[in-house]
Image (cartoon, rainbow, N blue to C red; front, side):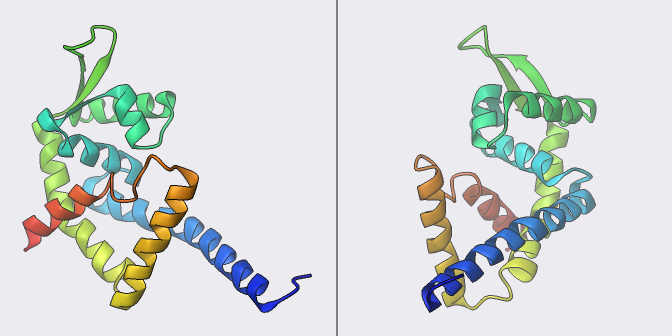
Length: 170
């Protein structure tokens, strides 16, 4: 059994985190499906490409940036290619590598989905928190990600997504 109040608080924090990891992905997928006819991960891949100079990334770098295996990313890129949202092109710097390039249609999809994505973040996810709780969440997220993957910052993959959405809305 748990021995003290601190253990009970840690247990509640852990169970809350586990619950969040279970309920959040379907919300994100549902939203992405509504706004961009894609999964959250597919939309995340498109957004990462939209952030890059020339809207292109090596597949290996894109897999790392989106925390995916090469196989998973390859399947996703194939689906996105079939919809005309990305193209695979040889890497000019390294003929052995392949880049994923966001097409004009892919860029338009990302831009059109950005306001809805920002609304989801502001209203449904963070809207129930006080400003102090949002600040705590940012600190807690950074600490946990730093513990799990010290090379990654929580905002690395998402900061420009929010900025792009805010510029379209604001």
